[in-house]
Length: 232
Ligand SMILES: [Zn+2]
View 1 (cartoon, protein in one colour):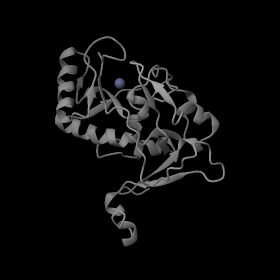
View 2 (tube, helix red, strand yellow):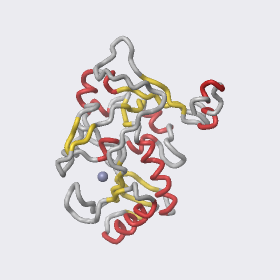
View 3 (tube, protein in one colour):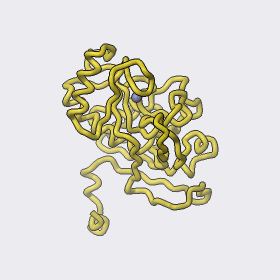
């Protein structure tokens, strides 16, 4: 892979094998802590290997692997490559870049603080982590976020970046507070990449797996034929 371009493979999770489909639950409804129902994402980036996760950048300062770092709380199958992460993670990264710049220092995501599948042990209720649209930040620059003062400071910075960002207030109630990280999320966003065809059939397409490659280099996207460009 060259250093200037990368493609991310997008898959329709209905086409993955039975075990993966059972774990990722594409399109299924889950309840949040308030009893509201939300539909789980269906389109995922496929991460082929650990090396790819390390080298693939989602933005200037965030690599893909920062959002897939989990421990034994995640299901073992979902820690084997190829691995999967909801496509909406790239919206999160856009906001994290702005948060990083407002905070004026590097932003470090905790283990289990990026994407968590519906099978993850912390996924008791629906949380934006299951959509790939939440991040638990445990350190900013050299500042470890464990005090009320630090968490409230960076919560305020996050809220000032955009009203799209939601944070959890400092406190000790799991799920509604945070006391050793700053939780940022965009809510329950499902992203459908333009490269993929949205088939209504929510069953595996054994003969015709649905996937596409998303070109992540804008300048190269511009180099398409005039007919293709017409759709913009
Ligand atoms: Zn969180």
